[in-house]
Image 1 (tube, rainbow, N blue to C red):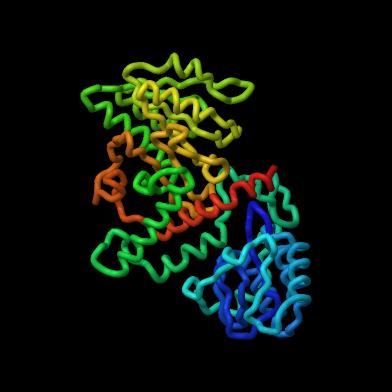
Image 2 (tube, rainbow, N blue to C red):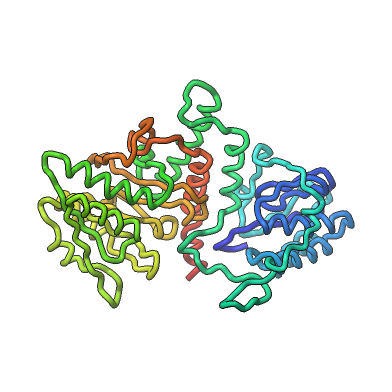
Length: 417
């Protein structure tokens, strides 16, 4: 019921047979047909289905609590019990009315019938108790009971159920090619993609026209560094120098090494041992007339250092040098305004902000215009910078995650602190 998982469960009482589970979790439950979106939901559904025939809210709560305790660490069992008991005392006799936890507003629980789909589920799946491996985890060769706690949020975050709800209709219904502009299916997909683009842009204070969808931050970093170097390195100014730090993500460091093999000059700035931050004087001294780009990550993915992005951006703007920022670890956690920070290129990742994997973004400033050479050729999608058919449902998921982050960023940060 609280960050970082934001998982919703409930109904107030077991509804009649013939209703269904949707991708929000357990909005309504059917005895024969259900849609399962995760191990947690599948396990919870099994518990509820077995208890619902007895029409006992207490038995549902007990079964659900037991199931969640043994099969998942995503929800607090005591919270489930408290919520179910509260719902039972205040529920309506109407099976279609469900109580909502106080921490979630009604608009966040809004469910559209188009977003739900039913599938036949074999009885063997519903009655499965799970394997021994499901209930144990291995630490240095020793098996312990239960499930390991997940403490690797900088590597990836779980998919927010509300993000999945936004994606679902575009995976199974509105499946047109977003670049097909001659029929309704294509128009619907394009509209959804552009809405997602606007949601991402809003989170960083940019124009939707400045957001390019990519497969993730790794591709965005490669496109920023190699694309800028190749374009301006071949221009009349013949700039051939790039500045970065020694503690960047591997994809940034490898991109710079690739440029070195092509004859570019790269300066790797050290960081202070006590803080992990770069020395701005060292950066100033490293800037040259032929410097194309400065690439510095906003928040380090291993040690958590927050670099002085606004100050670096100001220095680069004064010297008319492009500033690229890898913001994969900053997006959705701290406020970002690309204009105030003077960022010209910024990499983003969907799965770091409770969105899906396989989708990311690149902010490319339009005024003054930043030019890049594409990494590969094709149909010229994404302003000619990233050819290939977009997976529009992944774009929708990324956009939904960014919109949720804009609304809940402050609350999440206060909760963590």
